[in-house]
Image (tube, rainbow, N blue to C red; front, side, top):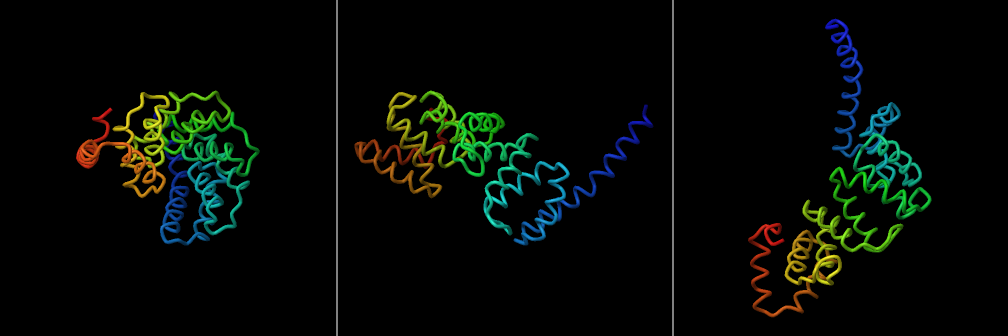
Length: 229
């Protein structure tokens, strides 16, 4: 039995070493901005079932990195990676189904893939899933569920999740109305450079007495936000 296991591991290492070498080449090429070399290294990996390479090819075709932008090809690679369990690919595929990028728009499939990614902790998926529930895209409007997902994204530092959660607090959707928490979440998002958050932050600030606003500004700069909730 030990001899059989030893042989198995030798075969596994012999198979994986070239793949690891190709992945290293791809990473080096991507770091150098040499997308042609990256594509040359990634494609055989992806065709051989490497889900990381599949997901990165999806990104390259989405962002036109060394290849013409092609959402259909991007979606196909994301689909392969998503089926293998890659959370970023699941998230992007869910967004593609929501927006109709490279695939026929399908909110049910969007929710399916976003939920898979969100449950793995992927912040973009958590924020996007919150949007589905907030706006009722393919589901019944559920503000409490939207807040739940926005909060999970926000706590990971996701700027849009923070902005969206702040807006929900300001409007009292899915949570009791709370201008203090609205201000604090929007402040964090605005500090990341999100202009939409800055606009909403100004609206909240305009609704607050000057003394209360000064205290919130101090808290926002000094206290971790999770201590306020």
